[in-house]
Length: 113
Image (cartoon, rainbow, N blue to C red):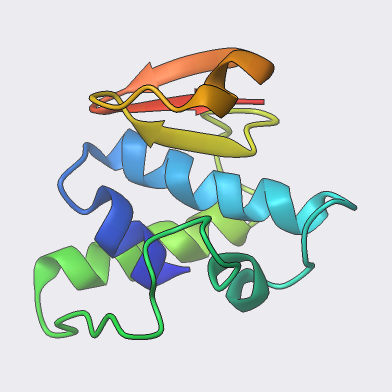
């Protein structure tokens, strides 16, 4: 999960990073998606290909991604995009966006249920 947060939202505000992690958690809870963070993150075409992505694990950005990922999985996490299962960068307009309900724009990303 931290790899996805780092790669997809490392340049976003903390709320945006938490929203990306929350999408993974929401998918884990959904019957439509796998039930583990690794399986969700590894689904083809869903997130940046993390298998070949080797995040630098000694900087503040990595430590933040790990902390955000842990927080998102905790019972105490604030929900910033309740029910969100999808997101994309604001500069793209994927065709699937019209089939889902837009619930938030945080930083440079748009989130949907």
